Length: 461
Image (spheres, rainbow, N blue to C red):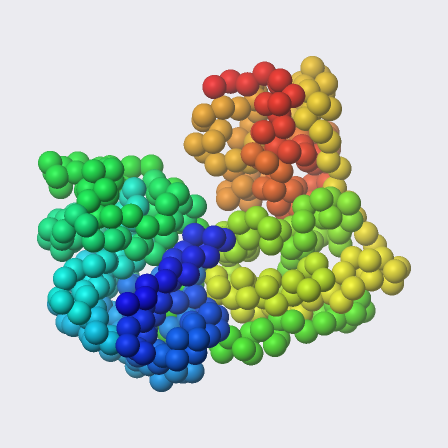
């Protein structure tokens, strides 16, 4: 028996490869199929089933592409109604993979089709659960995402989740392993641990949602308390996972089309494409194409693209570091952004050599900000709500990055102002958005709140 967790940090997502006696089951695959087919070839094995725990909202799954390439059937749990051929498992239905068996346990609540897959060894002993978004480490799946499609309130869905956990998961043995679909950083929950694998027994001790004496009312209150609005691209990803999407190879071929500066500019003007600069923030600060949006590959790239660009149909043109074109297109496609039209060959250097206009972003150290604070300069903090509440500069205004477009009128139109985040990544995203909206009097604080504390600037905690 071979169980492999294939974890993608940018999405905080775990896909799973299970092999026994030359047969393979894949659970919740990402968009690109190569990691799974290559592993199967290495093991001289055949992919027999592709299991989906639910219709994912935060990424586009690779179930359709993988099924097309391997011929393996796609398996969903009860209540799933995809637009393509799939095997809709019954609650308790058993699937054989080599000498192992996988049992579909219907665990609705996060969504109504949510299903946990229980793995049993050759002797019929329970070994592990692949819990999708039903059970995370330290948390459970948020119950507000399926409200519209399920025609239920989040409280009603939370109540159903309470029953699923107590009837299907908590009675299982403490020594079985929990393999969730997500870890810390995912927007599918709010309180996840940094670990990605644990025992069910430890979760019964540590996970607030699995308290043995917890009432249904307490569960509903605690699970729904403090939920942030879901990213705006979530419903679009659900639609793609349910109805289908473009062939991944075609998306890559289209997106890695090399364009010279003239072609790039012409295409940007004719299509209304967003120019997305995915280089390091320092490179963007030094020089970038006017009105380009910065979201760097070396940060939380895909979720921020999804949250801030939102419309998966939006045409995108890339400014990307040499050799990272396919990586950028792949990571965009993971969250449903399939309409990348190409990238600027030669990058900003080629753009400048072609005599085209270049912009830059003013960025100062925290020590410079400290001097300016004596003059009561405006400071905007774009961190998350909880980060700001924990500690912030006195008189700083809070406009979290995820909601920046709702606060455009809060920013000064003429006088210089400063913007910071925790470490210097999100503030450059924010500044790029502001500049693209015509607000050019923005100044980035390099190093963010970490540098601010090191500069001994006064902090309210």
